[in-house]
Length: 311
Image (cartoon, rainbow, N blue to C red; front, side, top):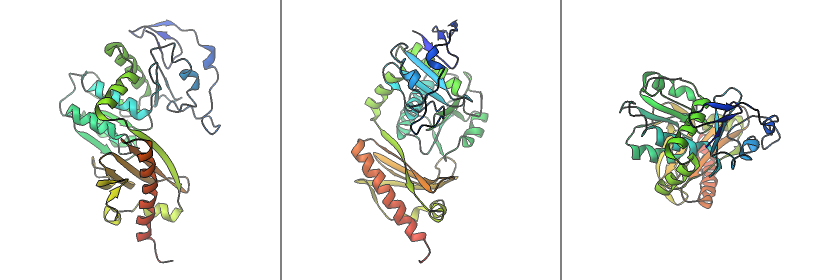
């Protein structure tokens, strides 16, 4: 088995560099979905060169230009969505780091996949769910109360073998090298392991979309409280939780999250555009996800109407 890593070259299982020849196909960066160059390792558009080599390598990986985000390509599944790889990494690490303390929790942002919640529950570990932003993991990674911190945008970090802090910022390189370790030790690539997780915990469908919002509406959305959401059901299921603060640390999320048994959505205003972002996930398929997205916009609109001044 060989691996293509952040430095173009071939690696043996012990990650010793055996050929430093740069593949000419990596001399040109492919553009993202809108024609812009972002060098986003979680984008299937930007990662086309590496995805095209998936059948030549068991596991391949890349990072963005400052190496704080990772992209994992496997022979079995192609480019893994960040949420999928985070679930695999957590499942593996907390069973293969025996020196990590029993109290070490798993940190995730509240817009990351609920598959992670299910994996953590099976592992018997504590979930530490925080607002969007890697800064919320810093203290936990520093003092060892978090073994892992990750976000849906392909940023993560985890502790050293003995459970002490490695870094309190996102580190794309260690997540990339972890994919090689997982493949070598488990005899299956992360794509295969993700498929096994979905067979046990359910297969999620996840998407982020944008909806228009005025500056006034964005300001109102950031100030919503749970009692201003009057609807009791989400896409045919009873609502289990309505959140405007994060369960892990009680910090305001700057928006709204609504959770049902097999689906959820979170709505947050954009800081730069006149839109709000809707993150949504379903464990009942694409049609159920679409229903969640449609109802999310209705719920947000109705909730904002209760706050809007007359006229």
